[in-house]
Length: 484
Image 1: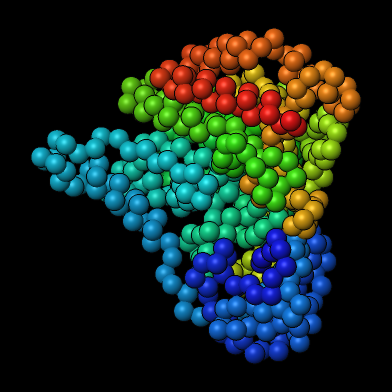
Image 2 (image 1 turned 90 degrees about the vertical axis):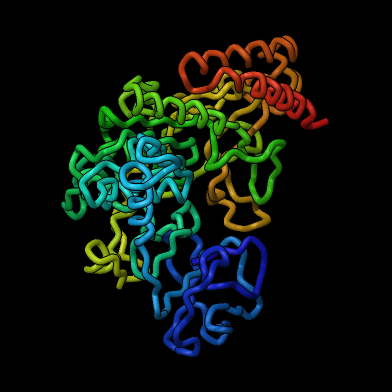
């Protein structure tokens, strides 16, 4: 499955131009290329005479592919490499470092603790690692003492299946039906409402003594683009599911899948992408995890949106302000009960492609305040003392097509008007910067106070505050320059 952002007549069958699985019979007249405009939209067959396959891996389209549309080709390949052994390699390497290897001067220098830290694909890898029970080594010992899985949402991935494609990551408008957002989603056993199957991320393959202490860390984007709410809600969508005592869940409010470069620039997005620099929290959270597993010193309490507090709602109930020129999304990424064939869950062999999908699971998103900023989560100083609305979503621009769809992995930075006069003229309901802060110095004092408060809460390190305040000053200058 692929999308192009500009008209092109050639496209690899590999995800992200990785090494492709070759098309076994490129001239097979039964091959079908389809195109659709929504994930659940009807597939239209592209005439066989309008396209052909070169070098067993390149689709060539007469007249070019239309930007912003979903193209899909299902074909037969062969010689799938062995996959899944990387999970065993991680287990055995970490176990060797802790229990079995000669390190430095001898056994006394072996590592006493191990922490797994994964971001995005490697975060999904860690969830997969836990699901298959690899945190128990071959001699019955715990492997990782702590796990930090960042921006993995509710996903796992194609790390242990025939014709594996680990890079395929199931986004709002790309690779959506790839086997990533698969039941179960919570740590402990839950019931799939459609199939009746019972399973849990930690209970599937391990006894409790092998469960590590876990931080699940997601930005606001993962609630729109990675079904993150499913890790802590019941599958009827009506109630919260409390995490286990040794699990923490944190949402980085107003963040995107990875903070945008600063200053931010549109590259196919409707709005500026979100540069909210929540990655500074990683240093503190890694310290918190180490103290938790070393000294049993508790980390900060979980901080994420709850149904019970009105902080987590269906997309249609989000009270996003009517900001001139800004469109709130009408579509988000969903997860589905999916049938890939009878051998998929037991042997990792998919025989039904694309999968047969059922009714979507109830994916919920954070409720917002009057500025359009998510109510819940961990708020960086940029969000506590804002110069803009920071969101976890952004839309594709009209120039690249599919403009009603979410831009994969992007959030938004929507600056406030600089003055009251400017906002009154535009009709922006959000108070202007002039109405919020008497001067740049006033802003920076409040910004620093917000950072220091995060230090007290153990979400930032004290030594990082000066650099963050410097960044805050640069953000003030950037926003003030907008529109000049």
